[in-house]
Amino acid sequence: MKRLLLLSLLAFSMPTLADDNTFDWSGLERSKISLEASVKAVSKDATELGIKVGMTGAEAMELLR
Image (cartoon, rainbow, N blue to C red):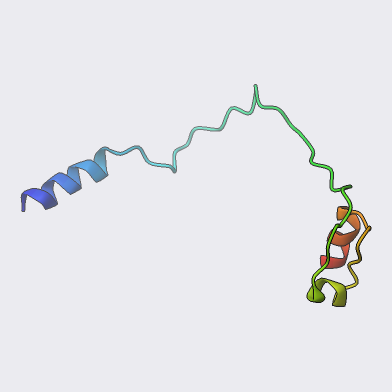
């Protein structure tokens, strides 16, 4: 019974994730990751999808869509 009471108190005292506060996005940095690196190796399944050694990562991603 003591354990149940302790667990209940801990659960109710923890902050909740769903609150009405809005997130302050100021101070964060926006970045973009380029997918222009070339494909170095291709599996059999990737070859069947049309992905080839030497194509860019962006080209390979388009074939996966």
